[in-house]
Image (tube, rainbow, N blue to C red; front, side):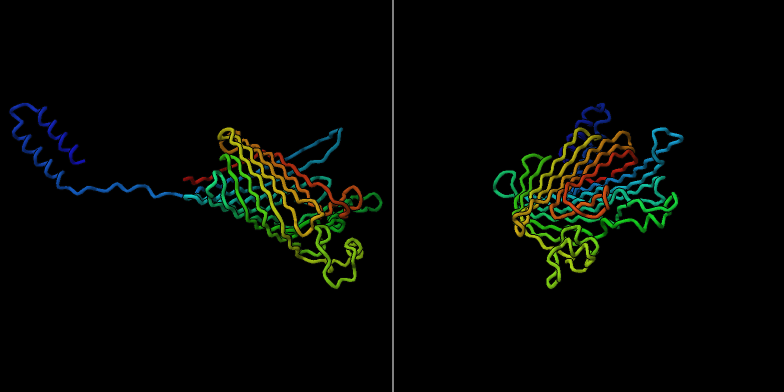
Length: 355
């Protein structure tokens, strides 16, 4: 910098007329001496940032109004909110990715004088990886936790007398509990290998995975496949449930097995993304039981600055969970595939702090 300053000072002097060159030469010389004597200011490189943070918020509202509609139907309203937060760390050969998904929503339909919950989910996942000498392969540790915020009910139609419409209290008296906070809750910690051949694709195989299933409400322990306690007078789980001996079921089930997770995220452009996760867990302790499957999908289309269309699906197959048959008595009586789908249009806002 000093040499450049002296050079330009000399060029300025050469460009001046002859009669002014003596004074100018003196001034330029003094300026050059001053610049040369000035200490160099070191250039401080920017501090490296290892975290990438994003927070996506959305609120969706739906409404249906019918007036003398011949085909039938009911006026209804729905409101749902969601948060998708990511905190990812990368430094050298190590990564640490964290994601929290929260969803909650409810609806009101004119055929029932009750506000019903239609969306409730808490899902946290933390993934750590350390590169191995093999390309695209890392040692990994994967932790995940799933549950919901509060109780969800199956509303069986109550019996009414003399053709009267059931009251709110009668609807509540006839309902059956389906789930609640920590009823169930799934916690898994797996050790294994993470393969990331592409930035948008990863496969995590954890042959050493410990798991805990918690069902805090004794009314739901049969539904979610909990075992009978030692010393119970029952050997048949269904009979114990039918007879109302709910306390004979364990609140916690420990699992040990292998877990496979496949994650993919396609970013078509800055306004359109598709993410999917397929997770399979096989329990070594119950070798004759099929694996548990969770498959989540989300399509996000940002249609305007603050408005987006979201399509999300969740599929669960758990061979130990008894699905309630609402067409009969609403009681848990068979295993099966659980599926739900949401198509929502609403307000969305994303906050991000990138590297």
